[in-house]
Amino acid sequence: MPDGTVMTQAEWEAMRLEAMDAIPDVIAQVGQTKALLPYQQGVVGLLNSVGTQVLFVEKSRRIGLTWGLAAYAVHRAGRQKGAGGMDVMYISYSKEMTREFVDACAMWARAFSSAAMAEEECLFEEGDHEGDKAIQAFRIRFASGFEIMALSSAPRGLRGKQGVVIIDEAAFVDNLDTLIEAAMAFLMWGGQVVVCSTHFGVDNTFNTNIQDILAERKPGHHVRIDLDQAITDGLYERICLIKGLEWSVEAEASWRQDIINFYGDSADQELFCVPSLSTGSWLAAPLIEARMTIDKPVITLDLPKDYLQRSKLDQNILMAPFYEQIEEELGKLDMDLRYALGFDFARVADLSVLPVLAIEPNMNRSEMLCLEMRGVPGDEQKKAVGMVMEHLRTRLVGAAFDATGMGWTVAEDMGRKFGLRETEDGSGLVWAIKFTEDWYRINMPPLKSAFEDGSLQLIKSDDHTSDLRVVKLLRGIPRVPTVREGETGKKRHGDFAIGLALAHFATRMRWSEYGYRPVPHRTAPHQSNNHSTNHSDGRLNMRPNHDDDRRQRGQFDGPLGARIRGGI
Image: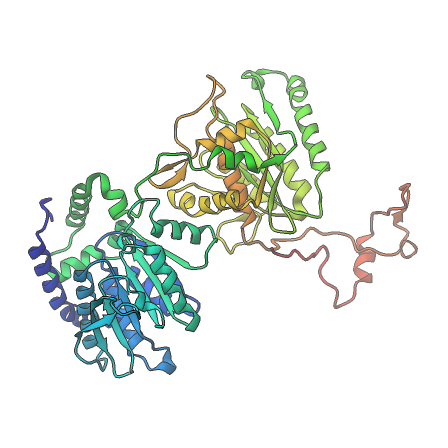
């Protein structure tokens, strides 16, 4: 409410009836195609697309998604079987919600002119055993032979049924895991399972299923709709249209703030899809230590604060051992494997960290190289990163760079040389990442899954264990807190955790050839006088005459330097 007071049940029911009665007028004004707002259209469109069998939607409270799902239910149940028609079952935790859903379906049926019989109450037997209780349900039957069935609890009677199952406000349903397990049987006959809810804690079954989908442990699609997205898509404008109010930017901002103020400390969970947080560490120490199985050195460099004031000779003396160690470790890498790297840039207070992950034939990831730099100027950091990328160029599938602050300059320079990627389907090896809550929310669960599944092996390091233990759930999202740990002047800030997250992200990048380097056409030694075989092992040191090379190529030969790079 604008004044911050809480509606009574009677006031809420009156408002809902008023809104429902106004919907036909809204459709008359905006048309059926625009009756649903963009975020509602997006969910309905996804459900109508081929391949969407399981959909989890985390959402803000009271944004009208149930109303959009009712439109989908009518479209689905109103179709003939040959057009994809099927029964739709709606389940929630309260009778009031099921009543509201059936009312919305009845309204949509009238708006779409679907041939539907009047809504009716019925008794739906829960289970096959004598003595099982019957529960009250609401149903709309269509001329297609299919029906919409709304249930007020989680019946075992789902067994043996088929069609679409919609579980609304799922986080508040009793025994949600059992209900989802029963609903998944609908997929065997081409049905769908739709689970949507406001959050109810980070450990709730609803949230753990979302995390499993994001971590690719379970199949399914995922959509997130918070209050701000709903407002951006026109939620308040639609409220004004229904209530006959005049819309303005100022009124919308005031309305939004009133709602946030009303929910107070619960606003993150109720309105912005952030489950109430747990304050423990994101990864347990025994789990981290169990994945640290690789005996390799972490290559570190800590330059004195007066490095830039020293002579060029002194600077070279300080840097030479570091570069030599990088070359030595690069020479030990198995070049039959593919690699990806992440780079978390820092210049003053924190460490720059560059972990390199090898992608094993069994798809496990193993950390084969790691650089740490403290107090190192940008040019020297770029040289070190460039050495690694140049050595791995032909086996590198992706590189994710921290592009916040000065980190953007390193990402940009590496992108000029190795190709800069801007979208998931773009080309280039270097993806400059500007961290957001969404990036952490989507990309940290797969990393945790790798720890839990044992598909990630790391270099043994106490410091790296500490960095990974720093990651906490902040507002329900895995993040590194702002507080640094360690001795004064050399504190760590979870630097390796961020670098590892970037590297693991890079192993999952879609990748393709972004260009080629000209290389000579290889010919037999007797075909050219421009080659020598002075190597003791008989290898050719080819220095071709390019005019001769062009003359020797056939019209169906590929371009010079082209090579095939596959995917994973």
